[in-house]
Amino acid sequence: MEISEKLLCLFNAEVTITDDKYVVEIPRREVDNGVVTPGDVYRVALTERAGEEPTETPVEEETVAPTEPQPPVEPGELRYVEIEDIGKQGDGIARVERGYVIIVPDATVGDRVKVEITEVKSNFAVGEVVDEDFV
Image (cartoon, rainbow, N blue to C red; front, side, top):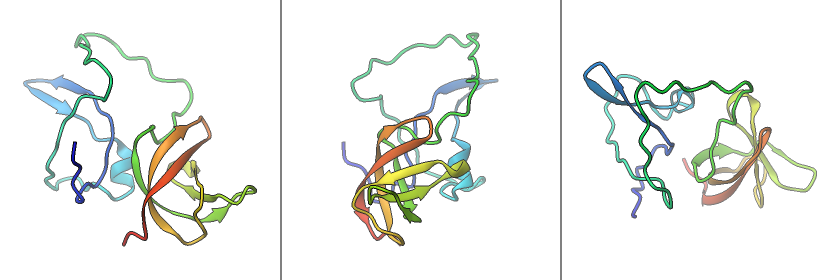
């Protein structure tokens, strides 16, 4: 699949039914980070998750909210970050929502890079640089 250079954000979302509409919710972090602006119009592309069979979720099924805050990133997600600090092992450190840390190997303070999240833990994630020096 070819991904446009104009890609603003990438996230997983569930399609739900609300009244007579099908709704795809945008995570609050995309608005909070300034990537998406409420009221603006965007082109949306939907794909199945790679390697997974689509599942049907009954509308009446209730979802249980997690008891602890969940990490604000997911594996495979693309993020634009600025390296704010260097960790003890020499890796770049970026912080996103709620101070959540993304460790970026081979990055230095002040670098503004596009990363792909490769590993997610409860209190930090690891991201691999896929594009350096974005504007």
